[in-house]
Image 1 (tube, one colour):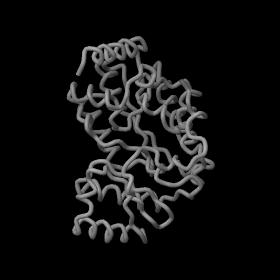
Image 2: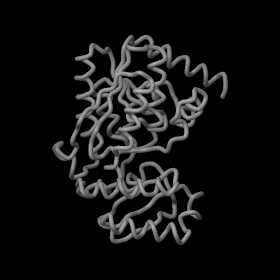
Image 3: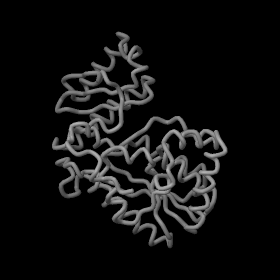
Image 4: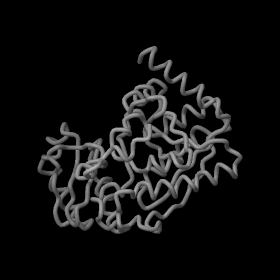
Length: 279
């Protein structure tokens, strides 16, 4: 912790205070929990949290969102959204995230208006500018505020401040919606989303910290932190993973030798960044 980082946090607090009342798009992840904590600290009852409930959002994340809001005394709204009913979404085009974010934030804006809330905030950070994220276009179009990104907070800084303020998600694994596990152009179905969800939950239950299970037809490509490769290669772990994944519907199970990295499905895109840089 440094005085400079605490000063940056003070600027965040000052900015949120100037908005008078906010709705925070709350996924229970590291970034949105930190943002919600800051908003609650400065605005008190003039902040609400809105969480999506969908087939791309594991129930454990929704339950954690509900528990945190109850603990903090924050009014919490749950938006039921079926991404697979959004036109074009299930075909997994390169702008899939845009389609979903546009639908979700229009719903959040409607809740904010009904509750007489001035602004809607979301938790993307500065690091998100370095990956292909078409959802940021929808956020800009709808004038959703992204204070962590605009004030230059990195993921590491958010974790450091979260630990300083005893926010429970400071060391929580990074998460993205389950639809991001599919190669662009592959059909997204409820059955395969459930396969991915169950597979990742198994790895978490086995004690792995940062996991992704990318789905390629009937093959599971597991991404773990390289430091956890040795643990995975233990015979009892490998056997358990293989047998359980087969039960979930996978025919083949592989370990990605590069390990976990964000947005690995974007690596094959010819144009990753320029079309989605907003700032």
